[in-house]
Length: 164
Image (tube, rainbow, N blue to C red; front, side, top):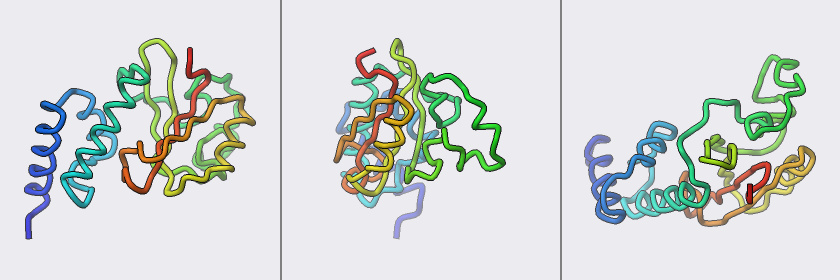
């Protein structure tokens, strides 16, 4: 059985061959998720890489944001609700605040602010849609375009104004 380093090497080689090298955005993804090698096959890693690079291109992403994964991270005015709770993950402004949201991350774009991403294990996200609508945010659901588990997790993009 191959060790972790060998699995990562094989997956990385497959990605490099498929996308023509290792562009910088894949380093951002690896720092965020340590994703190379966690998927079952090199082909899944290739699909995840292609999905992430398509997301980076679609949004003109410049890197991951250090802002909280909440409505304030995508540019709405702070209301203090983050500070009103002891567990930030349960704050009503947080993408996980009582709403199912797996694998959240927040990304900076060149000229459209930030986009909040979650990759739940289901394509039906009515609670998340309601949460976004309640906060005046746009939600785009993209089945098959996630990078956490491309076959099982859709990509959910939450933003102030996608057309910026």
